[in-house]
Amino acid sequence: MRKARSADVRFPAGLHSKGEEGTGGMYFVHHDLGSLSGGEVVEVTLSGSAANVRLMDSANFSSYRKGLEHSFTGGLTKKSPVRLQVPNSGHWHVVVDMQGLRGTVRSSARVLP
Image 1 (spheres, one colour):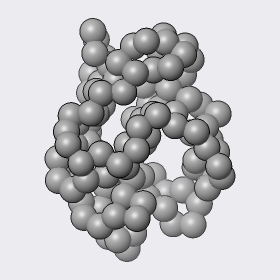
Image 2 (cartoon, rainbow, N blue to C red; image 1 turned 135 degrees about the vertical axis):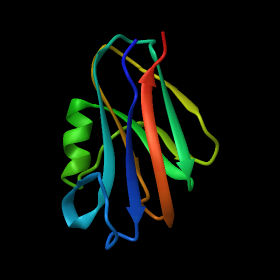
Image 3 (cartoon, rainbow, N blue to C red; image 1 turned 90 degrees about the vertical axis):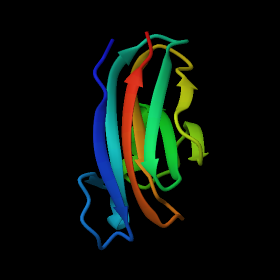
Image 4 (cartoon, one colour; image 1 turned 180 degrees about the vertical axis):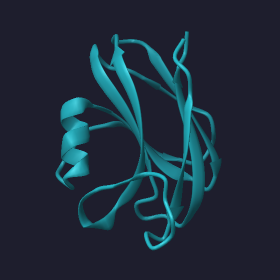
């Protein structure tokens, strides 16, 4: 089992964030899950506000960081925890952001056994 990682995202963007900054001042928290097999389940736990939770492969994560069109599993998450199934084998990332939302959220992500 992989250890969970936690981080804060605070919005509006002018507030302090322990996340990363993408194109256009967009802040997000990035959980690098490493190499996963299709069918594995990722559990993301949120504390605080609702947030957008996105499970993406490396190519889509790169596009997301650049503000380009990207594909993902997940979306607006109002109840926690949320479980997302990895669609196929590869290197996977979870991103938690507040795009279009207000508030503060703390997140952790782990791969279920």
